[in-house]
Image 1: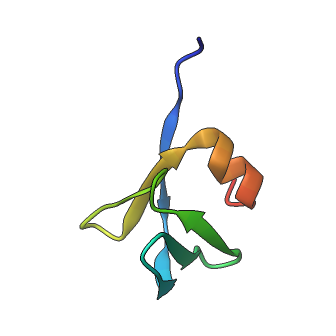
Image 2: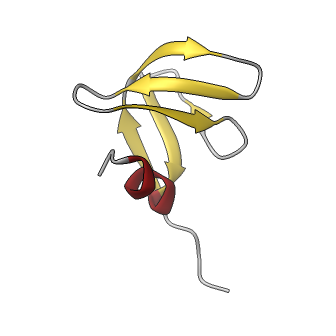
Amino acid sequence: MPKRELIDIAAEVMVETQRAFKIFDGKTTEWVPKSQVERNDDGTFTMPESLAKEKGFI
């Protein structure tokens, strides 16, 4: 099984629900599941690179 690469995306929360964040990175606004994303204290979100690509953040 390949190792999942994690990346940090600088973004702000637009909406938060029990299961997801709607985040905006300056150009893209998308929902991301809390089960796959970690919210950091420095204004970034750590997520799998594949999710970031799927949502258009990279």
